[in-house]
Length: 383
Image (cartoon, rainbow, N blue to C red; front, top):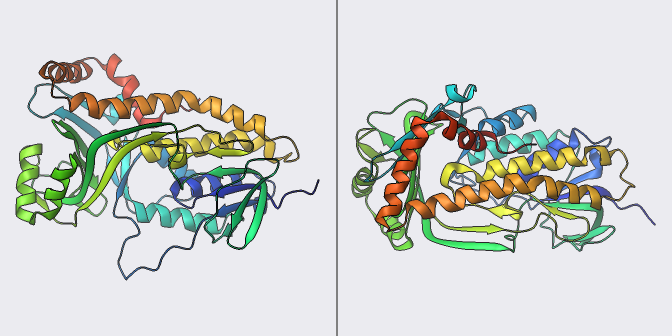
């Protein structure tokens, strides 16, 4: 049988796909046998962002990106996280010193992370194919269409594209994103506040010490109303929801709205095809776990494939199956946390909301309860 054109093809040039390509290139005897496929970015006006989001990357993700030479120049550190519930007593504070790390995480712009990853990938020796690939056809080898060419590889690793098919939940919430200026900023502190309609997060912003990145989850009609408000009215609504802890809050950036849902599918899609990142799961943004989980997917898949890369003539399917088994615990726990929190705290049941406040108080008073959850959000299950 003729050897396929590539050992591995990676579909998707977002952060997870690029990180996976870099992890594999460092382990491969010949990085040129790895292809990274995705379309050329669309032309943009000067100063126009590819993506308006900022990203909360935990300590484990920063360590990974630094090791790949892909950490952006500007980042805002998160040293503590203040978690509270609107209208109820009880809060908890997660502090970097409790976990023995220099920081809990950082906030960076999506564009900055992507640019750093693309620059690192350009010098890694992998083959970059600027085409939007079709759906892979599982088999030995796996084949897919890219532009006018049919390409094949021992395995195709999908990091983005169509959403995974499997477990699906619509939250009845949209995320309202913007940039906020605070009159009394608290250096290094992020806030996660659970409201009756969904979580509200204010995260330190990489562009200024008095700026915060807002992620406000509300029902769709409320999101549309907020998007249409003048700056002063928006600030007043945010103040009512968040409170006075940071002083007067003022919107200084454009508003962007995204619908929220959860999708989770299998890590394997047939012989020779594995999924990571958004191709494996999309999460509710509470606690900012989506990209962090995807980067752990990439790091663990690259580590599992490392011995096989020295002998690509061997059957890759048992290796991919081993990867899928290793990812079950981390994926399952992270999906459970991010799916449960926004639904429990948004319930209209007063008893449930009081119990939520009591749980926050218990977490604050009992480090033995708080530490396992905080450590999972910090670095996940990497075993």
